[in-house]
Length: 379
Image (cartoon, rainbow, N blue to C red; front, side):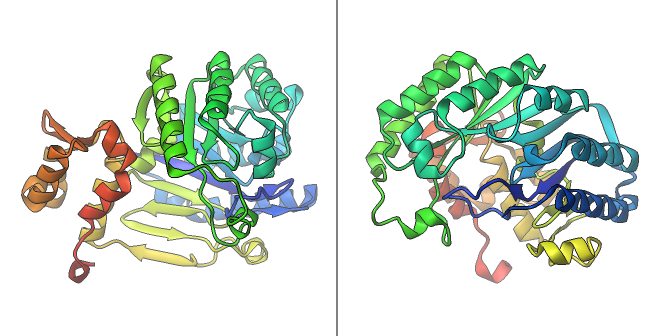
């Protein structure tokens, strides 16, 4: 049996952050959230039969702010998932959490119902940077939340951090990371702020005190060096983990495994097809089993590119024999010039029939990955 992941998109927030372009809604009531949970269950029931031969070893509640949901609602969704799908007893069950939306009592309840991993949106531990981002919590709130999470029984905790924040410096990034390392989470995600069209930060971009490219490079180097010195492995472009504590759910994405997603804007990759729901909450609530808003059966060239692109995000890289067996062609023959050029430039390495990016390659990954795009005639 193949193993896969389950994803639930929870599109509710107390407030929309200034940088966020994810599908989320504010001002929703307890009743709204319960109706949404009922719709999730109906959608699960609709797709359960096609997954009867699949074992799921990860469950992920993403958002939005999943920790905003009442605990009994999360328990209901999780219980129905266990009824409808084959979920391993030791499955990794992650819930994204905002420090402004839960206390020790709720965290303890989440642990009791089976959530065993938290992904906490800290972003920064410098209050002026949090203010620029429009976050509701302070640095003190975030640290209190992390310690409450551990006291509630969570041992597997990811901390989300962001760099490239307005007014951020290498020194302030070091301050944030030092305080996070004092807490010693099992996993840290560190990624650059993207100014997405339609967000408040994008509209203010000309007036923002954004770090320069050189500043961001210095921050990136600081993050990388401090985490390595403290025992974290840089196992994916934006992710670091203690040995054995990598995100099992995200590894499904990066290894091109199958996954089923439920809720507005949630995507699935199953039986060779990718399909997803639209962002219209009212339409989803009215009929969560309607035909997907977007559905694509991937052609071989597109599958091959995604296979390369996703695996090269990982430190482990890709297996040349596995690529050859899957796509019937030798990667080194198909992309000989590109691979040789990247190896010579120190962006890529080849070891024991595997191709992977170096640390320099990670920093310039967009430049590297675009070289493997299929020719237009093959798309």
